[in-house]
Length: 381
Ligand SMILES: *Cc1c(COP(=O)(O)O)cnc(C)c1O
Image (tube, rainbow, N blue to C red):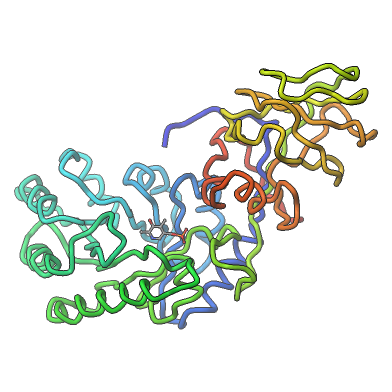
């Protein structure tokens, strides 16, 4: 991840206690010997990857899961005893230097095709390097991985080559968050058949894993040797509510009022004049817009929180600013923080509410939080 400036007025309040609580609650659903991989890809789902790693590295988390090797490089110095699992597959566009660095940092890399395996062998064969790989099997996700029928060829290749070491075998679910778990169970069956065929290749050091958050919560038979939890450690889930586990939201985002003014009845607000005041209206401007992840789609659609009171977003969301109606909040002041993403489930700008309004999922709301937000570790929720 590129270094970027921070702006200290857009604040992400990050609650370490919520992260600790969620990891513990998820771990409690697993047998004690099951390893825990905390997924911190996409800037820790918008929460700040280095901050989250620094908080969770003091716990009994075993692995940090990242999307790319570049994220892994970014946090490699920050981890304690934890290992780093890279979920995106290695590919033939990666240079020798890059592969070397992966090996040097002892990253656990995903291998998802025989072509890539041959490429790695050819690139590293004259070195003493041994890359740790987790072979990904596509049991029904339809994205990355070797099919069940190709799995043996790839495992055999890795176990008989000099440049790689088999460190894990895994798969990923397509529907574990849905009410109907029949397809997820077919995926488990397929995975188990593959594992059965490959039994002769395993040592006990090979980590078998499959479960994302939803499967960790709902499918104990999918836990194997390790679970990989992302969204749930941040306090959210796409599983039907009520959840069988208590999760606590780990962040709140706030931005200050930078301008207050009064407009007369009949005056309009922002581009396209999509809002016209039907009374004398006190308006406040906030320094967040669609370039800060606050979608233009939210124009005239949602309410933010000022002093515990709802303030509607009026007019179009612009690139760097939005306008809210504070007529009914007389104590609202210049500089005052306004809650833009709330950590309360019942808030009009809570993550579930924002997701529902815009036809998306909590993941996308959170990952839109810009990396220039100022992350502040906070005790009180
Ligand atoms: C993102 C991801 C996860 C975590 O998924 P959540 O639903 O956020 O728990 C686990 N495994 C893989 C392969 C992923 O890409």
